[in-house]
Image (cartoon, rainbow, N blue to C red):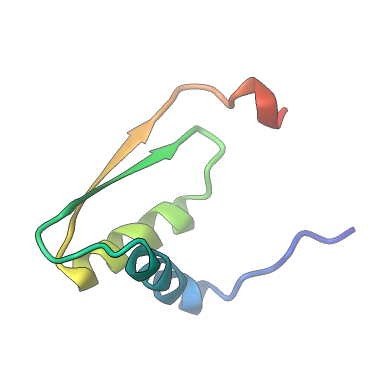
Length: 70
C-alpha cells in the first residue's frame, strides 16, 4: 500500500485550517511535539501556519521514535 501523498504547497494551509478548528487566536502559543522521524516539512508548515495566524509556536523534539510507532 502506498503512503498517502500530500501536496507540499498545501501543507501550511492544512495546518492553518487545523489550528483554526482548534480556535487558535492571535497572540496565543502553540506547542508541537515531534521526534527524530517527524517530517521536517510538516514542522515548517506548522510554523508558517502559526505565523499566518499571529500565534507563537514552539517545537519540542524528543530524541527517539516512541515505541508505539515502531
